[in-house]
Image (cartoon, rainbow over all chains, first blue to last red; front, side, top):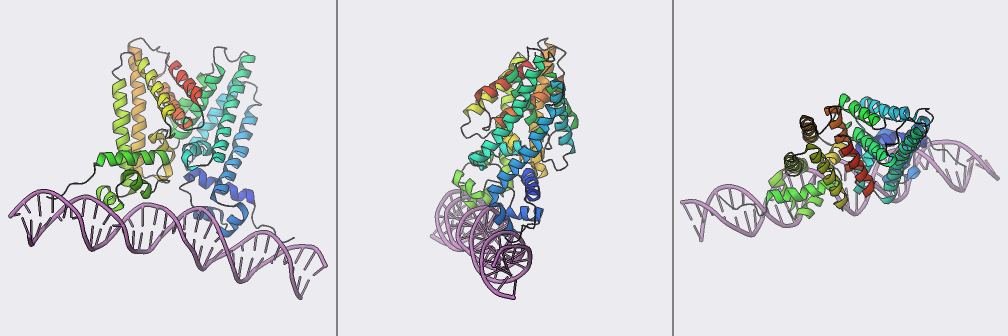
Length: 193
Length: 193
DNA sequence: GATGGTCTGGACCGATCGGTCAAGACACGG
DNA sequence: CCGTGTCTTGACCGATCGGTCCAGACCATC
């Protein structure tokens, strides 16, 4: 058979993801993507389909490579309180190092809500639930180990934590500065003690 | 002099605001606005300028009429803890009654960050600071009245509260349901006791 | 009722949008 | 070295984008 593709699909999606991540779905044009990837229009459509397909692939790649890996790694930390604290610290660190102020692809997409179809919404919701489950799991584990008091209610606290994540990611897009984000992370840790 | 405008500018901005609020800046077209307002293209440009001007006017109207009025009203409540609780309750209620899932215009805009110019960013930041100041003021007042313990740190707590507001508004756009939002609000109240 | 000013409606503008397509470049099996 | 089938390229498509413009509708003034 004939002639392989001249590019690596995963690389192209990675670059595509960064454009969508920064500008959002509506404000990103196909031309933005061809410029960012160096792939010409026709090849893009031949390889991936249309704009929506590129977006969904980007979202899935974001979830699989960034979020899931990170959460699995944190679940190996002995002290579940530390796992949660580390999660928030890395969040703040990521926001401060984020020179383009991209924020979090997942939350950005959640806010773009009405521009997206059901499949996209489902992916976003699943991603958020995954983080939520991580918090719940760590809180429960902390109770088992008597590191987190039973007075901490698992579900409400997990939900509040993910709300704080949303806050850090949204406000970190430019509205608020370093010390503010750090204080939010500090309060998050305080919720589980 | 001749002939007044056939429409009320404030009404037109109100309808325009709702379109921007729902769809965001990039995904909203001038045609969307002419359809929502019934005002023809030429008149719109004659009266307001361009798309960006319409957006800024919408943002300012949102801040002045919705946020500021509400905060002033809540500041008259005797118990500052109750003022904060009421704020979160009304937030949850608004999110649940929000059939279009518009969320909060301010946070939606904050997430659309790179599509906007400096003036817009300034308006958004000022709006968020206003809410933050409200929280700080209420917490301080609560301490004066010995209703809020001194162990509650004013600034970090205020920042965490606004992060929770962001969370409710973002997650309330469709990802999470009623009980989740209520639990977040409940945790917010718990932070100041 | 003629004049002068503002506002309205909608045709029109070039640019750009997402998407298509056909011609050519290329690597394989025969 | 000739098909055969895939991938690349850039021209091209109709639709829509934000924005402009002007003829005509309209009211106040004289």
